[in-house]
Amino acid sequence: MSVTGRARDESAGLRPLARRIEACRLCPRLVRHREAAAAAPPKRYRGEPYWARPLAGFGDPAARVLVVGLAPAAHGGNRTGRFFTGDRSGDWLFRALHEAGFASQPTSRSRDDGLRLRGAYITAALRCAPPANKPTPGELERCQPYLLEELALLPRVRVLVALGKIAWDACFRALRAAGRPVARPLPRFTHGERAAMPDGLILLGSFHPSQQNTFTGRLTRPMLRKVFVAAGQLARRRRAQPRPS
Image 1: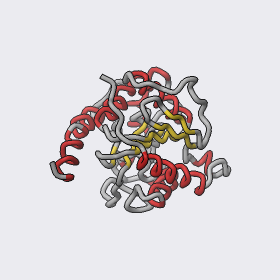
Image 2: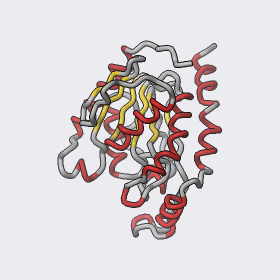
Image 3: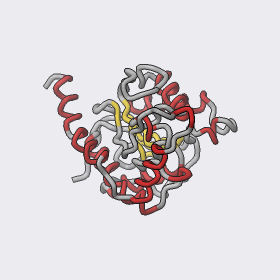
Image 4: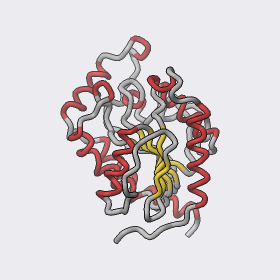
């Protein structure tokens, strides 16, 4: 089969999953919040159409690196319809991805801005913007099946990059739920932490590129770039491991 044919087959399962995610209304609190944000946007976004629906992941269906964030921003992804698009966190993330060779451009302003990811796929622990960026355990649990399906539909992934502790914990829960072996004892989240799973998968931790971290200097651009450079190096080294039956 040609490379083009393989890519087409790999993306086929992601499209129906995206449609189901975008139609989800399982969490009433999140539905209310995402729609309220669209109904009363800040002055700088007044008059712009808002997506105001859950977000599916996006990127290269043949990705070897899966980036897992927390959730869409109320006036970022919830407005533009794509994770980390149209907000300050995305400005940091896509610049780092571009510098590490994963993104075709260093910025992301809209869903149709021409951005393409190579070897990477971006998703999140939660698909809707939560109030105060704080999801409840029940909301994370209801969203977990979507992350599980993405993991199953991205069979080439060798490295997970968790942006923040919530994403780090969500990755471990998803791997256990998928029946995949995890490192023991469970490594604690810190920036730059590297957890090797028994089946060869690697989980890297990074502080989330939120303004709370970037404005205070807790996360710098070189720190974030280093994580994705490492992810690329590790992904190229890892060979395919058999999936659990």
